[in-house]
Image 1: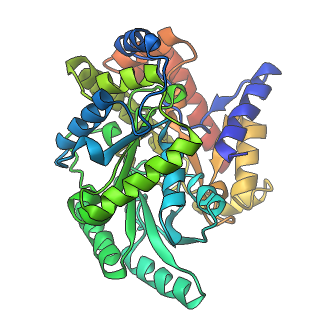
Image 2: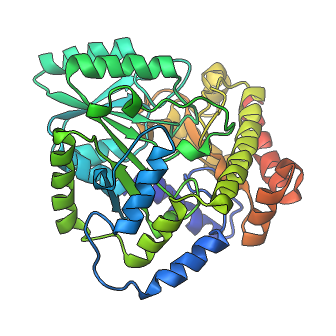
Length: 413
């Protein structure tokens, strides 16, 4: 089972047994469904017939407009929708030729999906400043090594902003990676599902599609920005040229035999949410503020405990490295990412996703903490966190953050 889903089920079992667990191990935007979106879902309930495989015209037009507003002129026939971005990424693995280059660490489903499609996977270290992209010089070296070993690397996956580090690659890095893609004839798959979860809306964002649009495919969705992961709404944008049209045709063909179509009620929601009326824009802004405030608080706790950690700027993750505490941790039997995650869960009641499950070096003392799980257990608590001028001052948020702070501090004690 996918390790994040397995951990989520493990936490549910432990809580059912009476254990008090602070859950930092699952990348869900833990907020209630926005009431106007629920209304659209209900309005769409009558759409019970099979729709177009690529998506209904109103939904595709809305997605095209979404990209237009992000400096990416898009026609509806460049767009397709699916039941979450994960199936769309899997379809890309089936449609595109060649092996896959991934940043190390990265989201835990990229590599298994590539292998399910019969591809080889080549991991490339990320830069010191951020995650989500391979370090450009290391990318060149890995491509050469992969080809020398008989591989056929032709796809590079980027995550902007990044899961698991909660950081965003800057424009210069994006241009460097795109230059490598151009020189080496790689297709760029840009996973931008966290684009609308930038903590500061003034943060510059450069999509690879603005640099090498003819070789970039973008995936996105509503699960992270608007907290409807269980509704499974994803979207994809292909290039506008002949090759892009052929790729979209292949993707639609694959989709026709995998999921048929995005369910009609979700088409209704997509047409509404991707059009971004004022209330959706306000919801996005409030959510990003909350995600940023809590992620920064967890980052402060990790650094105060002695870890090194990139400051989070997007999404809702931090990715601390407890290598500075290796010796005191060794005395507790903690020698790698797996034993660190076990110690945090068994001894301190903190559930995190160990770094080796994200393709990281197994002996590194790193893990992903999903900070979006700290907003409360009920809809009322979560809405209060979203509305608060200072969510860190709310008792239910503060209590969770205190437990995280105390748990991290005990690693150094």
